[in-house]
Image 1 (tube, rainbow, N blue to C red):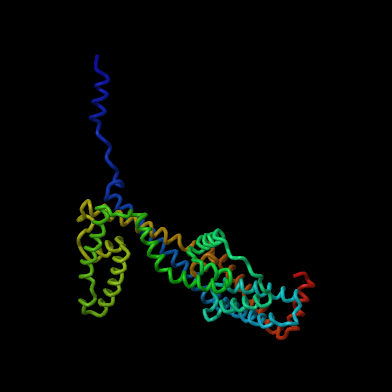
Image 2 (spheres, rainbow, N blue to C red):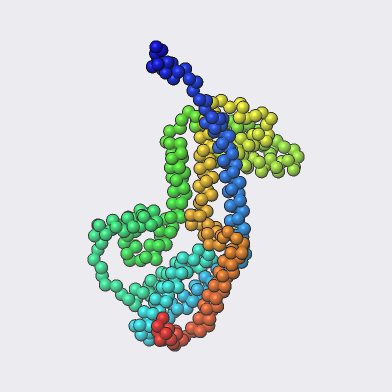
Length: 372
């Protein structure tokens, strides 16, 4: 009888292993990543075009109204503050006036489109001073260490800032000064935080130590850059038109090297050299390039998503007015314009109406009668 077990063993050991599909090879990975990056760049360019269209329209149609609205609200708060210290105000009138000013200041302080010359912090400090004058606070016992730790924890979670004891004391006794100081700290720390984030991002993608392939990829970037810099340097060009073109391309090249944009470097190389760059690459070069392409693809994807989550002005505008159809977007612009104009008219009406303390008292009385 045939040895069935031996036959099965022999078949298992002699059966040819399936070949790797092209997409699993380094060259296949390169092609796949290249196509994905090109698609993502096209997608990102389309998004940037749509965002720019909305932002440009906002700047032309809405921004002047936003600033006019903030200015009228600022003037109204200034006017109301002049009446807050009047002795003839009754207690309930002063309370109502304080609440009114507090609400107006809250909206004004959070308006991202107010003109820079409006000293909103100054108004807040002035209001705080009047509050202390007319509503003296009893001496409070010193904070316990656990209370200080809780404040530190809350501020760190909300703002990402670490407070010392002096910061906490300022927070307790003068919130306006504390806010101003914290804003200055955040602005000063932006660049440091950005560098830390970039380092952490690099560690997430590459790990703290580079592999040989990654080092080879960066070495190739340097090599491609040197070759292209010799070809594109504008000082070597005599023709003025070509000189301008090469100057622009040189700027593109410098940015690509700084950002490790291997996709752009390879594309420029293909444009300006006859050699087939990919065919000349060794295994180590290709592995390193693929790592750089993966990182670049991730950065492009994050850049696309950032417009929906970023707190910058352009993202704020985009998320406020973006819609699937132009008709819906037009409606959003029209409705917001209508609301701003109505608020501006209301503020200007109050500025004309409230010129004396008697005017303020009468309006407060009317609002109280209506249950406001």
